[in-house]
Amino acid sequence: MTRKLGLLLVLLLVLGSSGVYAQEVVRIGASPVPHGDILLQIVPLLAEQGITLEIIEFTDYVLPNLALADGEIDANFFQHTPYLEGFSRDHGLELAALAEIHIEPLGLYSRQVSSLEELPQKATIAIPNDPTNGGRALLLLQSAGLIKVDPKAGITPTIFDITENKLGLNFREIEAAQLPRTLDATTAAVINGNYALLADLVPTKDALYLEGADSPYANILAVRAGDVDNPTLKKVADALKSDVVREFILSTYGGSVVPVF
Image 1 (cartoon, rainbow, N blue to C red):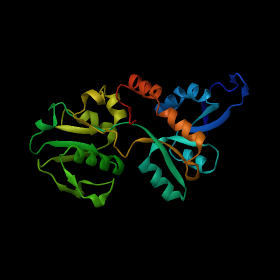
Image 2: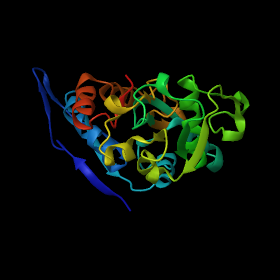
Image 3: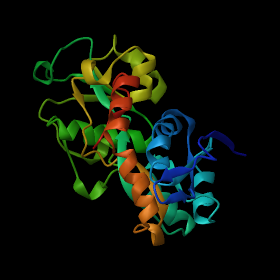
Image 4: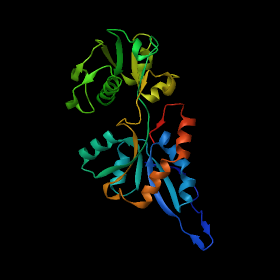
């Protein structure tokens, strides 16, 4: 069901002038990429503080939260807050976000225009056709000043919730994985970071507009609600927001993963 991505420095002893200090073990469930890779970067940082980090790989989006709620792991790192809140509500769990680490940003891309200002009247914009990413795309376009949506729709607006569309933009709802292929046939498309990367797009360079650090879709370190003040888990959160992690993200993922700290 799970596989250890890395358990480094298990027997490491931190030596000081007054003696030897035992390591405390923290188990974190994570998806392999980028979350598992990011966690590996903080193993040495935590070891210096007397903490051994054990990373448990999960390949689905259900078991990590159930394992956390059941106490099989101490935290998880794979999801954003809207997903955590929805899953917790649907399953009656008491989980909470401890720290926001990165986004895999949604961006607006075009091969027809080079800036938002060049978008013409009646431009055709392709967006994802699933409710979560489709709503996320519309919120991105609202943030860019292109449309307004009914705030009552929350984080899952649909095209029927658009209340202002000064350019008269037309929307095509397309399967998310196919959106890069629409760039030659539409004025622009809103594309998830992972699919942009697969299409050789660099979000931080190629997007007309990109989600920022205020995105509600920042990937988080999640814990049980009763552990939000746990000092050891706070050290893990601090390590994930360190310069080491920031530089790793920026130098490794080519803009497909963006730190929010």
